Amino acid sequence: MNETEAGSSGTPDGGRHRPSGGGECSPFQARAAFLANWHWQSVVCINQRACARGGAQHGINSETGAACAAEWEQTNRKELSLVETIDFLRICHRRAPFLFFNGNTFSFIGRELVFVLFSDIPASRRREIGSAVAHYVAGVLDRESMVSIVDSLCESASFQPGDRVQTLRGSTSGVVVRILDDGRISWRPNAGALELIGLPESLRRV
Image 1 (spheres, rainbow, N blue to C red):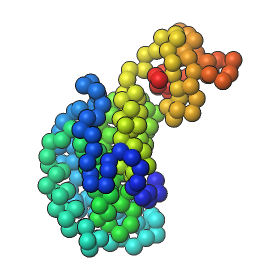
Image 2 (image 1 turned 120 degrees about the vertical axis):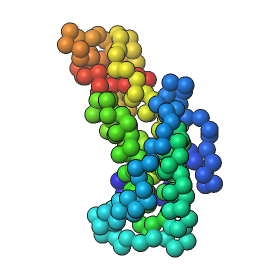
Image 3 (image 1 turned 90 degrees about the horizontal axis):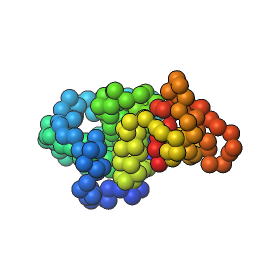
Image 4 (image 1 turned 90 degrees about the vertical axis):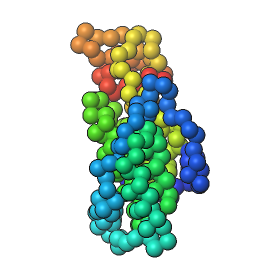
């Protein structure tokens, strides 16, 4: 993901956000010290690698770097909900403790974090969850959309005829026609008469 200037809706400039994230059964309500193994020096190393790949000079922002480092070391050991943890990564990006690639740095941490937490979810869904979280941290996806995407991808992939579904990236929507004997889904897109066949893991409810 290229460095992106945070500016979309979700977390306002002051770091304030809606207190809730997902419903009562949402994975966002899980609480732990999710960043306990990510010490500030490891964050610095991630930024160094991002800068090397992007051909930019690695450096610490003299105005915000020290304060952000201190806050990170105080916060990464705290027990937070998952959505609070992801919000914190977005706030760190916006404070820009590094000269370049702040978005890439904290998005990478968010993506790697959810890859581990959702390791039991099919790989295709896990990639989409990681993408949604990374785009939120980078400021190009709003909070409500990120929560909605992740919650829907965490639902059980068990469908019934008549269920409204869409592809994981949301490019095509339709309705389930029948469930095949081998477990695959036959579904009809809204804009077509032909039925498509796919794995349950390739679709999500709408």
